[in-house]
Length: 135
Ligand SMILES: [Zn+2]
Image (tube, rainbow, N blue to C red; front, side, top):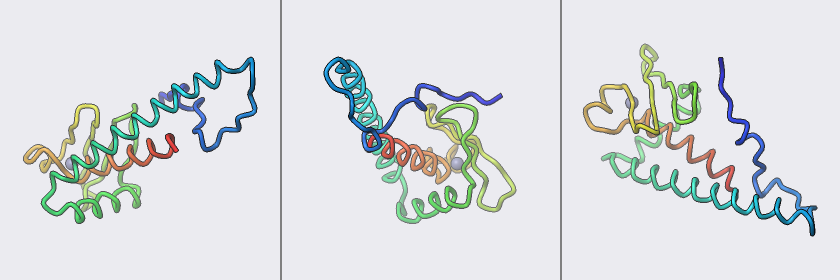
């Protein structure tokens, strides 16, 4: 069974919203202001997490390129809940479970060093999504 978050689906990013409500609909505008602030804070949190991850790599540009390739080739898949992903290994023979809430990946590299490009790819994907919502 797939679980979806209906609260997220109902949120309309500010850039796509038409503000036709006036007067008596102030409460709606206020609610959107709260959601906009939350979206902006979430995007800032993701950007901070991404910068922190990139800083952990000796070759940040190389790791970023590998993570981007993983995303673009469909090797990073959202799993059963937000923050949980499945990544395919670079040789395509293994899969790893990434949990951005737990800051973990089941690959050997992450176990050894505390960072890997699978986890980086998940953070990059979350940052991109958060920035789209906040835009
Ligand atoms: Zn990993």
